[in-house]
Image (tube, rainbow, N blue to C red; front, side, top):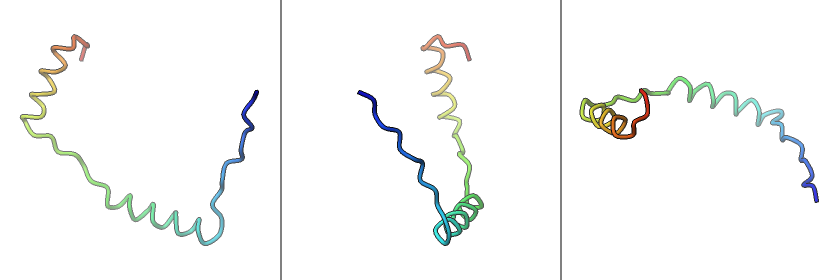
Length: 54
């Protein structure tokens, strides 16, 4: 028995404008991740034990 395919919902009108506005505002607020030396050392230890080439 097949599962029916549903249509993809599309934002229209004021809802679409508000979504775009909020997305642009949030993009401006985007931050970065700062890893400490301890975090980096821990990462290297884990990768060395996993034997995954890095």
